[in-house]
Every structure is written in structure tokens, then in C-alpha cells.
Image (spheres, helix red, strand yellow):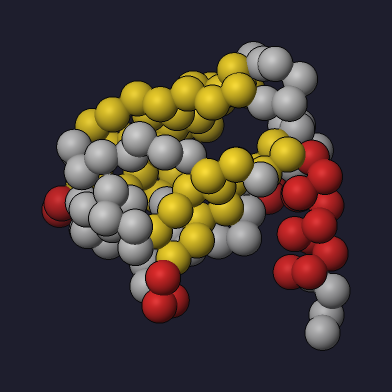
Length: 114
């Protein structure tokens, strides 16, 4: 697990992160005040997804786990959703990159039925 750093309160920003295999994921973030939330576009190799709302989640990208070797957890302080433009920059919310092993661990915990 790797916590992404460098997310600011700027409404539009581009970040990238490197996976364990050395490949690069590009992430475009946009804060939309009219919808009171953060949205993201992701690009990794030939896989692309646009307009995902960032919500508190153990793995926001779980539905694509058979296509991509990573996941993305959105963790929050105090069980709040990332609704404000400053939520990531002031430490109320975090974006955590999950590698394939982390995704399996999260699945085991989140979907164990207990």
C-alpha cells in the first residue's frame, strides 16, 4: 500500500504513480463544486476510465480487478466523504494505491461475510 502525496486543493490536477511492475498510472483529478465532490479519470496501458466520483471505499476500482493489477482505497477520518476541495490536502481523506496482494487482502476482509 502506498499513500499518494501531493494532492492539493486545486480544482484540477494531474498525478501519476508507478506500480510494482514499473508501469505508470495517470490520474486526473477534478473538484466539482456544483456536485460537491472529487472526480477522477484513470489511464493504465490500454485501460481507461473517466468520471469516477471519489468516495470512501476499501477499493474504488474493485469492479475492474480482473483487468488491472492495482486498486485504489479512499480512506477518511471520522467516516466522512471527500466533499470539500481541501479534504485531501488537509489530511481528512487519503488516496491509497493497492497492489495486487493488497487487493486480495482487502477483498478477504471486505467480503468475508463477517
